[in-house]
Amino acid sequence: MNGPLDVVVMAAGKGTRMKSRIPKVLQRLAQRPLIHHVLDQAASLKARRVVVVTGHGAPEVEAACAGRTSAAGTFDLKFALQQPQLGTGHAVQQALPHLAGDGTVVVLSGDVPLTRPETLAALVEASGGGRLALLTVRLPDPAGYGRIVRGAQGQVERIVEHKDAGEAERAIDEIYSGIMAVPSALLARWLARLTNDNAQGEYYLTDVVALAVADGVPVVAHCIDDALQVAGVNSPAQLAQLERAHQLRQARALMEQGVRLADPARFDLRDDPKTGARGELVCAQDVEIDVGCIFTGRVEIGEGARIGAYCCVANARIGAAAVLHPYTHVDGEQAGVRVGEGALVGPFARLRPGATLGREVHVGNFVEVKNSQLADGAKANHLAYLGDATVGERVNYGAGSITANYDGANKHRTVIEADAHIGSNCVLVAPVTIGAGTTVAGGSTITEDTPPGSLSLGRGRQVNIAGWHRPARKPKA
Image (cartoon, rainbow, N blue to C red; front, side, top):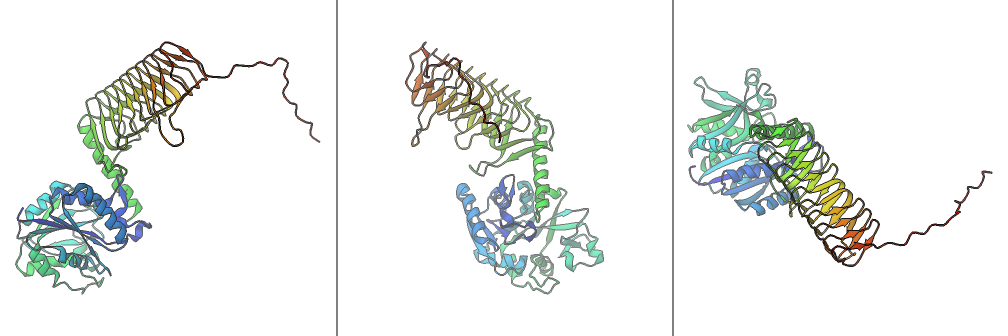
């Protein structure tokens, strides 16, 4: 790169067609605001400064951007308010006071989230510190986009907006993406010469192309063939289309690595809005993923593991040969979830933050585990709750049993030592320790520690009343 690099992000639009109170650049793709994807692009370029041009919903947009960059801390962030909004050229004019004028400026759109870092790096290289470089793409239907008008020798002469284009110009299929790289000093000179003599009465940034040609500055087009990289969002339908295209791109990348996806069209890998973790799925060999699964944040899956249909897995590590049966919900949040080798989980199980399952652990249908460790071979096969518990090896935890871990003010821990057997419908009132090898009889409420190897009961004596009759219904009047 020739000198420092600054980035201007256009984020002032209202997005009327979105029919939403949420500013367009804060609409979500893969569970992250569109503009966060664009700020990541700026970070990939190692930008010195990013100037976000805001307008509609400026306070919300600024807060969202500041939250993203405070975590990354990779560039200096500034904001420029465009009010009123008089076109793209006018928008960049508002950013100009924040630009030092000693390097290259890359102009990005806050609603174009999927431009690849290598594409932007190639665009900056094409600019070379002395040229105006435009990112272009050829489209079968270029309606609505600015057309690249070339001269007899193929050189770029100007960009004509769709509404100002004649019939011959509208037939051109090479369009301007809205992304450019330009020397800072030249950009400042051209912005000062923009006029609004056009059908919209706006100041077009694209007019700098003709000004560059007039000044004898080379204009180059870096043309790509991947329209997804320059696709913007203007409506809920377009957002949904872009989401599916993005997810399909991720799915194909995983399949190229050997992951078996039952249907790549029914797969989602999302960023985690709660933790800020980027969506990342790391799979060993022979992993199988059924339809409708959603992965959020960073998820690691060991060799030969199988993920059943419609599972939701966030911030977790799934061991080799483990199985998540359909409709299992795993959410590690900050604490993470660990599932050991060969463990069986679900269907309809829920693993919450801090759940750690050892090897060959069974957690069955409608079992919830939170902030608990289950050692190798432990089993809780159905309809149970384990919260704030330490469970030893080979423990069998019965249906309907719970750890009562909350006293209304504080959480307490339950310890169940190895080889204990907890009968059905038991309540273990924490803090309490169930000794190794203890059997807790079904229906018991345990409030005190139990000695190892004992039989523990904590329930009322059964009473049978002979000859008892149910109340009879009164006859209807």
